[in-house]
Length: 379
Image (cartoon, rainbow, N blue to C red):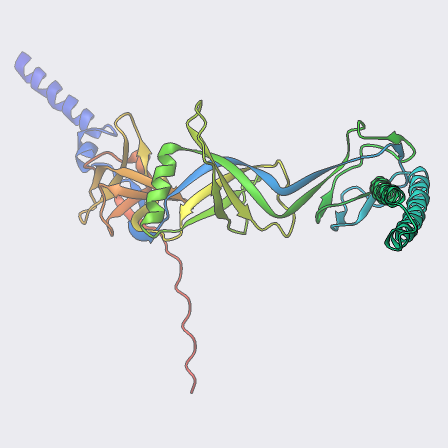
């Protein structure tokens, strides 16, 4: 009787367990495979590149200063104007310097007249000496007077030239084409050689960018150039956008910094729109002109753990396989795979969080860009 009751309870318990949701019946059926998005690995040209912090520097930069003392006259420009070589930008009262020029001119003219008279006296003394009616002493005296008059003329001519130079300094001109900054002194103030910089003119087009690279990077770049691969230089601006014009390397410093082991490299860029300013900080991108073809996958497909980079590949039986890979350069949302993957293999780019190695998945291939429509045939 007791054994019959035990059998009955055992059968009843088994039936209840089987009827519960999630019991062995459903466990045997199994959950549906997780849905994932896949994309075949493709061969794409991706150039290797390096990025540096650089600073823009004007090719020509001139600080305008007063070279003579006087009251500053009206400005001949507005702050930020484009100016031409030889354009007058500041004036200093010219009247005292013009008076000095006039004075030196008069002294020069007097010296000319004295030299003319000395020449005549020397000629007469020479004639008298030739006719033996004059003496050698008189001739020598007249010769000395003529030489003194000639020296006096040269001295006054030099003084006149100096006065003219001082007068020319009353007009402060731009020595280059470029953009002028703000004036630091207002008209009416007394300025002189000790007044400091009145304004600065910079030549903005083209413009240089200076950046420092390590010796190892320099060696790699030189190896690339010896193999025929031309280096291209680009700039990334403060808002993250790329500067549209490419630059060219034109100078590598002849010495390296002993503290950083860096060497200054210079590139030149066109700056017709004036987007680059002297002293501006930019990011410099150096890459090869010929991009090698590599296996590329979306960056979303690659994950990282303590061992390194890995991704999931789906085989023809829809089974996920974990692959350890060696990554290369990243560009435009793609990452190059140097080792561990073949072109054409389907890589999971979405839904990896639900996937474990060896798990069966339900893959859906990511849509690709539609091919361009073929041109209509002419009848």
